[in-house]
Length: 157
Image 1 (cartoon, rainbow, N blue to C red):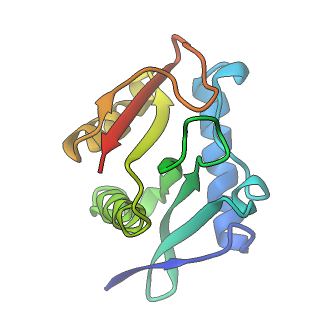
Image 2 (tube, helix red, strand yellow):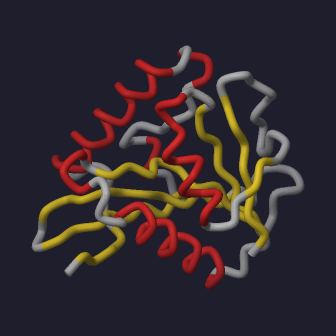
């Protein structure tokens, strides 16, 4: 059975997954268009970080960053660092994680959740996942700027 729990991005297996995630982001997007966070940035107090595990084995991760400190962003959050391990892809781990993050956002009475992802074909599965869960494209948010390599999406809760 897959369980999703709060976890530390500093754990060895998580650190490796996040390093792989960052490497893929830099391999598919120009450096100025990479907005993924490393394990230390994901430890910030404004970020809640979760992992999905099965019998202790890491399957994926995801995070929710509260945007309350950004002007006009009270009651809003941003999904960060959604990643599934290669061996767990196709098992619904990303959907489970996304539903978990959205349930947490609703329990905090957030009004809206945002995300940024890439425009390249590599990111097509992520864009489809978010669209299936009701996200729609939106303008840049929370200090992001228009970028031909970024897609901005939002979901009203």
